Image (cartoon, rainbow, N blue to C red; front, side):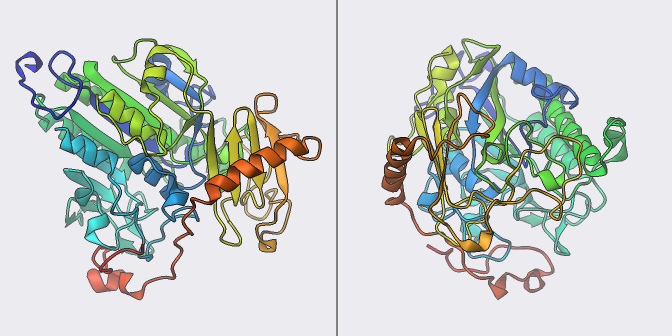
Length: 484
Protein backbone atom coordinates (compact mmCIF):
# COMPACT_ATOMS: atom_id res chain seq x y z
CA UNK A 1 0.00 0.00 0.00
CA UNK A 2 2.86 2.37 0.81
CA UNK A 3 4.22 1.98 -2.71
CA UNK A 4 0.97 3.27 -4.18
CA UNK A 5 0.98 6.47 -2.16
CA UNK A 6 1.42 9.64 -4.14
CA UNK A 7 3.00 12.14 -1.84
CA UNK A 8 2.80 15.88 -2.33
CA UNK A 9 4.80 17.09 0.64
CA UNK A 10 6.34 20.51 0.88
CA UNK A 11 10.10 20.16 0.63
CA UNK A 12 10.42 16.81 2.42
CA UNK A 13 13.04 14.28 1.43
CA UNK A 14 11.18 11.29 0.04
CA UNK A 15 12.59 7.79 0.36
CA UNK A 16 10.59 5.04 -1.38
CA UNK A 17 7.78 7.54 -1.86
CA UNK A 18 7.49 8.74 1.73
CA UNK A 19 9.47 10.64 4.38
CA UNK A 20 9.97 8.77 7.66
CA UNK A 21 7.45 8.49 10.43
CA UNK A 22 8.74 10.17 13.58
CA UNK A 23 8.12 9.15 17.20
CA UNK A 24 9.54 11.67 19.68
CA UNK A 25 9.46 10.28 23.22
CA UNK A 26 10.05 12.53 26.24
CA UNK A 27 10.33 10.68 29.57
CA UNK A 28 9.58 12.95 32.52
CA UNK A 29 12.20 13.03 35.31
CA UNK A 30 14.00 9.90 34.09
CA UNK A 31 17.51 9.77 35.52
CA UNK A 32 20.82 8.71 34.00
CA UNK A 33 20.76 5.54 36.12
CA UNK A 34 17.09 4.74 35.46
CA UNK A 35 17.39 2.82 32.17
CA UNK A 36 18.62 -0.69 31.51
CA UNK A 37 21.28 0.35 29.02
CA UNK A 38 22.98 2.27 31.85
CA UNK A 39 21.86 0.14 34.80
CA UNK A 40 21.12 -3.59 34.29
CA UNK A 41 18.92 -3.73 37.40
CA UNK A 42 16.29 -1.65 35.57
CA UNK A 43 13.78 -3.63 33.50
CA UNK A 44 13.43 -1.65 30.26
CA UNK A 45 13.67 -4.17 27.40
CA UNK A 46 11.92 -2.03 24.78
CA UNK A 47 13.91 1.10 25.52
CA UNK A 48 17.14 -0.92 25.62
CA UNK A 49 16.43 -2.66 22.32
CA UNK A 50 15.78 0.63 20.54
CA UNK A 51 18.90 2.20 22.07
CA UNK A 52 21.13 -0.76 21.25
CA UNK A 53 19.85 -0.94 17.67
CA UNK A 54 20.39 2.78 17.18
CA UNK A 55 22.74 5.49 18.42
CA UNK A 56 23.18 6.26 22.13
CA UNK A 57 23.90 9.90 22.92
CA UNK A 58 26.60 10.01 25.57
CA UNK A 59 26.63 13.78 26.03
CA UNK A 60 23.01 14.79 25.61
CA UNK A 61 21.97 17.75 27.74
CA UNK A 62 18.66 19.30 28.72
CA UNK A 63 17.51 22.01 31.11
CA UNK A 64 17.31 21.27 34.84
CA UNK A 65 13.48 21.35 34.94
CA UNK A 66 10.49 20.55 32.73
CA UNK A 67 9.06 23.59 30.91
CA UNK A 68 12.39 25.06 29.77
CA UNK A 69 13.42 21.76 28.15
CA UNK A 70 10.08 21.34 26.39
CA UNK A 71 10.35 24.88 25.07
CA UNK A 72 13.83 24.07 23.75
CA UNK A 73 12.60 20.87 22.05
CA UNK A 74 9.71 22.59 20.33
CA UNK A 75 11.28 25.93 19.34
CA UNK A 76 15.02 25.33 18.97
CA UNK A 77 15.71 28.38 21.17
CA UNK A 78 17.36 28.50 24.58
CA UNK A 79 14.70 29.15 27.25
CA UNK A 80 16.68 32.07 28.65
CA UNK A 81 16.06 33.89 25.38
CA UNK A 82 12.32 33.55 26.01
CA UNK A 83 12.16 34.35 29.72
CA UNK A 84 11.51 30.70 30.64
CA UNK A 85 14.70 30.01 32.55
CA UNK A 86 13.39 30.24 36.14
CA UNK A 87 11.85 27.00 37.32
CA UNK A 88 8.68 25.98 35.42
CA UNK A 89 5.40 27.42 34.19
CA UNK A 90 3.12 27.05 37.18
CA UNK A 91 -0.57 26.17 36.99
CA UNK A 92 -1.83 29.71 37.47
CA UNK A 93 0.77 31.82 35.67
CA UNK A 94 -0.15 33.75 32.52
CA UNK A 95 2.96 32.51 30.69
CA UNK A 96 3.57 30.19 27.77
CA UNK A 97 6.26 29.45 25.23
CA UNK A 98 6.20 32.63 23.09
CA UNK A 99 3.53 32.59 20.40
CA UNK A 100 5.80 34.23 17.83
CA UNK A 101 8.03 31.14 17.76
CA UNK A 102 7.22 28.25 15.42
CA UNK A 103 7.00 24.83 17.02
CA UNK A 104 8.55 21.67 15.60
CA UNK A 105 5.02 20.33 15.21
CA UNK A 106 3.98 23.32 13.09
CA UNK A 107 6.87 22.77 10.68
CA UNK A 108 6.01 19.10 10.33
CA UNK A 109 2.30 19.79 9.96
CA UNK A 110 2.99 22.29 7.21
CA UNK A 111 5.15 19.68 5.47
CA UNK A 112 2.22 17.25 5.37
CA UNK A 113 2.71 15.20 8.51
CA UNK A 114 -0.17 14.00 10.66
CA UNK A 115 0.77 15.38 14.08
CA UNK A 116 -0.43 14.01 17.42
CA UNK A 117 0.60 14.72 21.03
CA UNK A 118 -0.13 12.38 23.94
CA UNK A 119 0.79 13.08 27.56
CA UNK A 120 2.04 16.14 29.41
CA UNK A 121 2.04 19.60 27.79
CA UNK A 122 3.55 21.98 30.38
CA UNK A 123 4.23 24.79 27.92
CA UNK A 124 1.53 27.12 29.23
CA UNK A 125 -2.23 27.22 28.72
CA UNK A 126 -3.63 30.54 29.97
CA UNK A 127 -4.76 31.29 26.41
CA UNK A 128 -6.11 28.71 23.98
CA UNK A 129 -3.44 30.00 21.59
CA UNK A 130 -0.83 28.42 23.86
CA UNK A 131 -2.33 24.93 23.66
CA UNK A 132 -1.34 21.98 21.46
CA UNK A 133 -3.93 22.22 18.69
CA UNK A 134 -3.06 25.88 18.17
CA UNK A 135 0.63 24.98 17.96
CA UNK A 136 0.78 22.44 15.19
CA UNK A 137 -0.89 19.33 16.57
CA UNK A 138 -3.89 17.73 14.90
CA UNK A 139 -4.85 16.13 18.20
CA UNK A 140 -3.93 16.16 21.88
CA UNK A 141 -4.71 13.66 24.62
CA UNK A 142 -3.38 14.39 28.07
CA UNK A 143 -3.01 17.17 30.61
CA UNK A 144 -1.87 20.77 30.43
CA UNK A 145 -0.18 21.32 33.81
CA UNK A 146 3.17 20.11 35.10
CA UNK A 147 1.92 17.22 37.23
CA UNK A 148 -1.16 15.09 37.70
CA UNK A 149 -2.41 12.13 39.69
CA UNK A 150 -1.97 8.98 37.58
CA UNK A 151 -5.39 7.61 38.56
CA UNK A 152 -7.68 10.56 39.35
CA UNK A 153 -6.10 12.79 36.66
CA UNK A 154 -6.40 15.75 38.99
CA UNK A 155 -4.00 18.45 40.17
CA UNK A 156 -4.74 20.24 43.44
CA UNK A 157 -8.12 18.54 43.47
CA UNK A 158 -9.23 19.71 40.02
CA UNK A 159 -9.45 17.65 36.85
CA UNK A 160 -6.80 18.16 34.17
CA UNK A 161 -7.43 15.68 31.37
CA UNK A 162 -8.43 16.45 27.77
CA UNK A 163 -9.05 14.73 24.49
CA UNK A 164 -8.62 17.61 22.09
CA UNK A 165 -10.84 20.43 23.29
CA UNK A 166 -13.05 18.07 25.29
CA UNK A 167 -12.67 17.31 28.98
CA UNK A 168 -12.22 13.61 29.79
CA UNK A 169 -14.52 12.83 32.72
CA UNK A 170 -14.85 9.05 32.58
CA UNK A 171 -11.32 7.68 33.16
CA UNK A 172 -10.95 8.08 36.92
CA UNK A 173 -9.26 5.00 38.31
CA UNK A 174 -7.46 4.17 35.05
CA UNK A 175 -3.66 4.39 35.09
CA UNK A 176 -2.60 7.21 32.78
CA UNK A 177 0.39 5.40 31.26
CA UNK A 178 -1.97 2.67 30.07
CA UNK A 179 -4.45 5.24 28.74
CA UNK A 180 -1.71 6.97 26.74
CA UNK A 181 -0.64 3.64 25.24
CA UNK A 182 -4.24 2.91 24.24
CA UNK A 183 -4.59 6.31 22.60
CA UNK A 184 -1.33 5.84 20.69
CA UNK A 185 -2.53 2.44 19.49
CA UNK A 186 -5.81 3.98 18.32
CA UNK A 187 -4.09 6.82 16.45
CA UNK A 188 -1.68 4.43 14.75
CA UNK A 189 -4.40 1.94 13.77
CA UNK A 190 -6.48 4.70 12.14
CA UNK A 191 -3.55 6.47 10.50
CA UNK A 192 -3.55 7.00 6.73
CA UNK A 193 -0.37 5.22 5.67
CA UNK A 194 -0.01 7.53 2.67
CA UNK A 195 0.76 10.36 5.11
CA UNK A 196 3.88 10.54 7.31
CA UNK A 197 3.18 10.38 11.04
CA UNK A 198 4.62 12.56 13.81
CA UNK A 199 3.78 11.14 17.22
CA UNK A 200 4.96 13.28 20.14
CA UNK A 201 4.87 11.25 23.35
CA UNK A 202 5.76 13.46 26.33
CA UNK A 203 4.83 10.83 28.90
CA UNK A 204 3.71 11.67 32.42
CA UNK A 205 6.01 8.89 33.59
CA UNK A 206 8.06 8.96 35.72
CA UNK A 207 7.26 12.27 37.43
CA UNK A 208 5.87 12.13 40.94
CA UNK A 209 3.39 11.27 42.47
CA UNK A 210 4.92 7.82 42.81
CA UNK A 211 2.09 5.56 41.62
CA UNK A 212 2.10 2.31 39.65
CA UNK A 213 -0.01 -0.86 39.36
CA UNK A 214 1.34 -3.40 41.88
CA UNK A 215 2.42 -5.94 39.26
CA UNK A 216 5.14 -3.56 38.06
CA UNK A 217 6.42 -2.75 41.52
CA UNK A 218 6.53 -6.50 42.26
CA UNK A 219 9.21 -6.88 39.57
CA UNK A 220 11.71 -5.25 41.95
CA UNK A 221 11.68 -7.36 45.15
CA UNK A 222 15.36 -6.67 45.79
CA UNK A 223 14.93 -2.88 45.95
CA UNK A 224 14.75 -2.07 49.63
CA UNK A 225 13.53 1.55 49.65
CA UNK A 226 9.80 1.94 48.95
CA UNK A 227 10.08 5.07 46.81
CA UNK A 228 12.80 3.57 44.63
CA UNK A 229 10.85 0.34 44.26
CA UNK A 230 7.68 2.17 43.17
CA UNK A 231 9.67 4.45 40.88
CA UNK A 232 11.38 1.47 39.26
CA UNK A 233 8.00 -0.09 38.60
CA UNK A 234 6.89 3.16 36.98
CA UNK A 235 9.89 3.02 34.65
CA UNK A 236 8.98 -0.51 33.59
CA UNK A 237 5.35 0.54 33.04
CA UNK A 238 6.66 3.33 30.81
CA UNK A 239 8.78 0.82 28.92
CA UNK A 240 5.74 -1.42 28.43
CA UNK A 241 3.79 1.53 26.99
CA UNK A 242 6.61 2.17 24.53
CA UNK A 243 6.51 -1.52 23.63
CA UNK A 244 2.81 -1.17 22.80
CA UNK A 245 3.59 1.73 20.47
CA UNK A 246 6.24 -0.37 18.72
CA UNK A 247 3.80 -3.27 18.34
CA UNK A 248 1.09 -0.99 16.95
CA UNK A 249 3.51 0.44 14.39
CA UNK A 250 4.54 -3.07 13.37
CA UNK A 251 0.93 -4.21 13.02
CA UNK A 252 0.12 -1.19 10.83
CA UNK A 253 3.19 -1.73 8.66
CA UNK A 254 4.80 1.55 9.73
CA UNK A 255 7.60 0.38 11.99
CA UNK A 256 10.13 -0.32 9.25
CA UNK A 257 10.20 3.36 8.30
CA UNK A 258 9.85 4.99 11.70
CA UNK A 259 12.57 7.01 13.40
CA UNK A 260 12.55 7.08 17.20
CA UNK A 261 13.99 9.99 19.16
CA UNK A 262 14.17 9.55 22.94
CA UNK A 263 15.11 11.99 25.70
CA UNK A 264 14.20 12.80 29.29
CA UNK A 265 13.30 16.44 30.02
CA UNK A 266 15.73 16.67 32.96
CA UNK A 267 17.64 14.38 35.28
CA UNK A 268 16.06 12.18 37.93
CA UNK A 269 14.64 13.76 41.08
CA UNK A 270 16.52 12.02 43.86
CA UNK A 271 13.97 12.77 46.60
CA UNK A 272 11.25 11.22 44.39
CA UNK A 273 12.87 7.89 43.58
CA UNK A 274 14.92 8.96 40.55
CA UNK A 275 18.65 8.34 40.31
CA UNK A 276 21.54 9.76 38.30
CA UNK A 277 24.44 7.82 39.81
CA UNK A 278 27.36 8.20 39.29
CA UNK A 279 26.65 11.75 38.08
CA UNK A 280 26.50 14.54 40.62
CA UNK A 281 23.26 16.22 41.58
CA UNK A 282 19.60 15.91 40.69
CA UNK A 283 16.78 17.50 38.81
CA UNK A 284 16.58 21.18 39.81
CA UNK A 285 20.35 21.62 39.50
CA UNK A 286 22.83 22.41 36.77
CA UNK A 287 25.13 19.65 37.93
CA UNK A 288 25.54 16.86 35.38
CA UNK A 289 22.94 14.76 37.18
CA UNK A 290 20.30 17.39 36.55
CA UNK A 291 21.14 18.04 32.92
CA UNK A 292 22.95 15.10 31.28
CA UNK A 293 20.42 12.49 30.26
CA UNK A 294 20.00 9.03 28.75
CA UNK A 295 19.05 9.76 25.14
CA UNK A 296 19.16 7.89 21.85
CA UNK A 297 17.90 7.80 18.28
CA UNK A 298 16.91 4.63 16.46
CA UNK A 299 15.49 3.65 13.13
CA UNK A 300 16.14 2.61 9.53
CA UNK A 301 17.35 5.97 8.20
CA UNK A 302 20.56 5.68 10.22
CA UNK A 303 23.55 4.64 8.12
CA UNK A 304 25.65 3.59 11.11
CA UNK A 305 24.10 1.93 14.17
CA UNK A 306 25.06 0.19 17.37
CA UNK A 307 27.49 2.86 18.52
CA UNK A 308 27.72 5.69 21.07
CA UNK A 309 27.75 9.27 19.82
CA UNK A 310 30.09 11.40 21.91
CA UNK A 311 29.32 14.77 20.37
CA UNK A 312 27.85 17.51 22.54
CA UNK A 313 24.09 17.63 22.05
CA UNK A 314 21.71 20.13 23.66
CA UNK A 315 17.93 20.12 24.09
CA UNK A 316 17.58 22.82 21.41
CA UNK A 317 19.22 20.49 18.87
CA UNK A 318 16.28 18.08 18.78
CA UNK A 319 14.34 20.69 16.80
CA UNK A 320 16.70 20.97 13.82
CA UNK A 321 17.86 17.37 14.00
CA UNK A 322 14.34 15.95 13.77
CA UNK A 323 13.42 18.37 10.98
CA UNK A 324 16.53 17.29 9.10
CA UNK A 325 15.61 13.62 9.53
CA UNK A 326 12.28 14.53 7.90
CA UNK A 327 14.13 16.19 5.01
CA UNK A 328 13.33 19.74 6.15
CA UNK A 329 15.60 22.70 6.65
CA UNK A 330 15.49 24.66 9.89
CA UNK A 331 15.94 28.37 10.45
CA UNK A 332 19.72 29.00 10.56
CA UNK A 333 19.21 31.70 13.21
CA UNK A 334 18.01 29.22 15.82
CA UNK A 335 20.17 28.10 18.73
CA UNK A 336 19.46 24.59 17.48
CA UNK A 337 22.23 22.80 15.56
CA UNK A 338 21.31 20.12 13.03
CA UNK A 339 23.22 16.98 14.07
CA UNK A 340 21.34 14.51 11.88
CA UNK A 341 24.10 13.89 9.36
CA UNK A 342 26.77 13.48 12.05
CA UNK A 343 24.62 11.01 13.96
CA UNK A 344 23.44 9.24 10.84
CA UNK A 345 26.99 8.49 9.70
CA UNK A 346 28.89 8.38 13.00
CA UNK A 347 30.80 11.58 12.33
CA UNK A 348 32.22 14.12 14.76
CA UNK A 349 29.50 16.36 16.17
CA UNK A 350 29.29 20.04 15.19
CA UNK A 351 28.46 21.51 18.62
CA UNK A 352 31.38 22.86 20.69
CA UNK A 353 29.59 24.75 23.47
CA UNK A 354 26.26 25.42 25.16
CA UNK A 355 24.70 27.22 28.10
CA UNK A 356 23.32 25.22 31.03
CA UNK A 357 21.21 28.13 32.27
CA UNK A 358 21.15 31.89 32.79
CA UNK A 359 18.80 33.03 35.54
CA UNK A 360 19.20 36.25 37.49
CA UNK A 361 16.22 35.67 39.80
CA UNK A 362 17.41 35.37 43.41
CA UNK A 363 17.64 32.69 44.46
CA UNK A 364 18.05 30.90 41.14
CA UNK A 365 16.47 27.76 42.54
CA UNK A 366 17.43 25.46 39.65
CA UNK A 367 20.85 27.03 39.03
CA UNK A 368 22.06 30.54 38.21
CA UNK A 369 24.53 30.20 35.36
CA UNK A 370 26.72 27.65 33.63
CA UNK A 371 28.56 27.14 30.35
CA UNK A 372 30.26 24.20 28.63
CA UNK A 373 33.03 24.88 26.10
CA UNK A 374 34.87 21.83 24.87
CA UNK A 375 35.81 19.70 27.86
CA UNK A 376 35.43 22.52 30.38
CA UNK A 377 32.37 23.43 32.41
CA UNK A 378 32.05 26.61 34.46
CA UNK A 379 29.31 27.16 37.04
CA UNK A 380 28.64 30.56 38.57
CA UNK A 381 26.67 31.20 41.73
CA UNK A 382 23.94 28.89 42.98
CA UNK A 383 23.89 25.56 41.17
CA UNK A 384 20.51 24.36 42.41
CA UNK A 385 18.91 22.48 45.25
CA UNK A 386 20.94 19.26 45.56
CA UNK A 387 24.70 19.26 45.83
CA UNK A 388 25.86 15.70 46.35
CA UNK A 389 26.29 12.27 44.80
CA UNK A 390 23.44 9.86 45.43
CA UNK A 391 23.93 6.09 45.11
CA UNK A 392 20.75 4.18 44.23
CA UNK A 393 18.42 2.49 46.72
CA UNK A 394 19.04 4.88 49.59
CA UNK A 395 16.45 7.05 51.31
CA UNK A 396 16.78 10.68 50.26
CA UNK A 397 14.43 13.26 51.72
CA UNK A 398 14.46 17.03 51.82
CA UNK A 399 15.50 16.67 55.46
CA UNK A 400 18.49 14.36 55.12
CA UNK A 401 19.86 15.11 51.67
CA UNK A 402 23.17 16.89 51.15
CA UNK A 403 22.07 20.36 50.21
CA UNK A 404 23.76 23.27 48.49
CA UNK A 405 27.10 24.22 50.01
CA UNK A 406 25.93 27.83 50.40
CA UNK A 407 22.66 29.18 51.73
CA UNK A 408 20.23 29.60 48.83
CA UNK A 409 19.15 32.91 50.33
CA UNK A 410 22.57 34.47 49.81
CA UNK A 411 21.62 35.09 46.18
CA UNK A 412 23.59 34.53 43.01
CA UNK A 413 27.05 35.05 44.39
CA UNK A 414 29.83 35.33 41.83
CA UNK A 415 31.86 32.36 42.97
CA UNK A 416 32.94 29.83 40.40
CA UNK A 417 33.29 26.09 39.99
CA UNK A 418 35.37 24.81 37.06
CA UNK A 419 35.53 21.18 35.93
CA UNK A 420 37.29 19.30 33.18
CA UNK A 421 34.50 16.86 32.30
CA UNK A 422 36.71 14.69 30.13
CA UNK A 423 38.96 13.90 33.10
CA UNK A 424 36.37 14.42 35.84
CA UNK A 425 32.88 13.60 34.49
CA UNK A 426 31.44 13.32 38.00
CA UNK A 427 32.51 16.82 39.09
CA UNK A 428 34.65 16.00 42.10
CA UNK A 429 37.52 18.46 41.54
CA UNK A 430 36.92 22.20 41.33
CA UNK A 431 39.76 23.68 39.24
CA UNK A 432 38.73 27.33 39.59
CA UNK A 433 41.55 28.30 41.94
CA UNK A 434 44.28 26.60 39.91
CA UNK A 435 43.09 27.67 36.45
CA UNK A 436 42.09 31.35 36.80
CA UNK A 437 42.78 32.09 33.14
CA UNK A 438 40.32 29.41 32.03
CA UNK A 439 37.75 30.79 34.48
CA UNK A 440 38.22 34.27 33.05
CA UNK A 441 37.91 32.97 29.49
CA UNK A 442 34.64 31.17 30.20
CA UNK A 443 33.21 34.04 32.23
CA UNK A 444 33.82 36.37 29.28
CA UNK A 445 32.20 33.88 26.92
CA UNK A 446 29.18 33.50 29.19
CA UNK A 447 28.80 37.26 29.48
CA UNK A 448 28.32 37.46 25.71
CA UNK A 449 25.41 35.07 26.03
CA UNK A 450 24.08 36.97 29.04
CA UNK A 451 23.75 40.07 26.87
CA UNK A 452 21.12 38.15 24.85
CA UNK A 453 19.13 37.03 27.91
CA UNK A 454 15.48 37.97 28.36
CA UNK A 455 14.62 38.51 32.05
CA UNK A 456 12.75 35.60 33.57
CA UNK A 457 8.96 35.70 33.34
CA UNK A 458 7.91 34.87 36.87
CA UNK A 459 4.57 36.59 37.45
CA UNK A 460 2.42 36.08 40.55
CA UNK A 461 -0.54 33.74 40.54
CA UNK A 462 -3.55 34.82 38.48
CA UNK A 463 -6.84 34.48 40.41
CA UNK A 464 -8.70 34.02 37.11
CA UNK A 465 -6.93 30.68 36.60
CA UNK A 466 -8.91 29.08 39.42
CA UNK A 467 -10.64 25.97 38.05
CA UNK A 468 -13.79 26.82 40.01
CA UNK A 469 -14.57 29.30 37.23
CA UNK A 470 -14.39 26.49 34.64
CA UNK A 471 -16.53 23.76 36.12
CA UNK A 472 -13.73 22.57 38.43
CA UNK A 473 -11.46 21.79 35.48
CA UNK A 474 -8.08 23.31 34.70
CA UNK A 475 -8.87 25.22 31.52
CA UNK A 476 -7.41 27.73 29.08
CA UNK A 477 -9.01 31.07 28.37
CA UNK A 478 -8.29 33.12 31.48
CA UNK A 479 -5.74 35.47 29.94
CA UNK A 480 -6.21 37.58 26.82
CA UNK A 481 -2.54 37.27 25.96
CA UNK A 482 0.27 35.50 27.80
CA UNK A 483 2.97 37.61 29.40
CA UNK A 484 5.48 38.94 26.86
